Image (cartoon, rainbow, N blue to C red; front, side, top):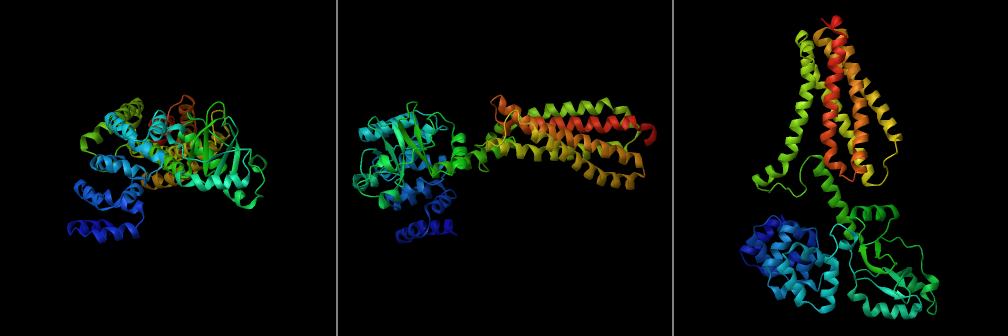
Length: 444
């Protein structure tokens, strides 16, 4: 196991073993192993490796907490050198997590041009296209010939993050199109870039939300997205590795929120932090539980006449909740991918139909079980009808709630589950006990 190998090498201060690990293992695997080590072990490991190796590790999906600890522990002068091996957007991410004082220290020590670029990027919200972009791209004048473009690329390519896609601009640096690097090798040397460029460029603005950027990349199968201002002047680019990070981040956030958990919480979070982050939603759930309980209280006389109803109630509410969660999951995903929006009600009709069919089938199974247990055919009829009603309610609310939350600019993943649980519990108890009240002469 890599963690144990690192610990053994550190214990024996075996530098050659550490160098071998750096050569043989991917930086992402090294970063994952460092997450398992004590802080002192991490700092000691970092002291053995080269600046370039450290840069590669910091550019992986290492946790922000560990990233900051490493940056703060590494000597200031060394960290500046490490930054020279990193792309601008990754440096911005690191600087954004540091204190204002530390950030200013680094910016003041950098070259004026680098410092200015980084300060501009830091000014954007980190969850927008401006916060994701890097200014390390190749922009060529449209009047250059293919040969001139090739010579320019040879000179500046080592300093740029992406060279596969070349951005063509006019004299005012307005974006005119793109040229694939392959065209530079296959077209005639004397052809101008304006003659071979692709004018159909999909771009975003600096304020475009990162989730929308990820949808655009996915929809158009892009490897890089230019960021332009309102005059179509190119400001930077967003690369596919940043988009992958965004997709993973958004997916994780939605998964946490649907469970009523803060996306910042981990298994290693202190107990107090976990309680603080989870308690608000648990309190809200408590109040909604009282609402469901009040429905049960309305039918206390009905329940007292037939104890079997108390045993069957949770079946209806539980199945409705499960069905609603399935619908919410599908709708939240569709919203994230831009496949559905407010006003598209065809999906609700489908969910109503699915709810009816599932309610009929699962209700039939439950009816057979209850009839065998209590020997009452009408109890089976009641639970079939109640199951159908609650499954249809689950389909309607499971479809409608995420759309409504999105309409009012909320996060569907955050509140959908809470409101859905309330709807299916109240609907399930009311339909089951209401039908039982109507059928009571036949049940007792």
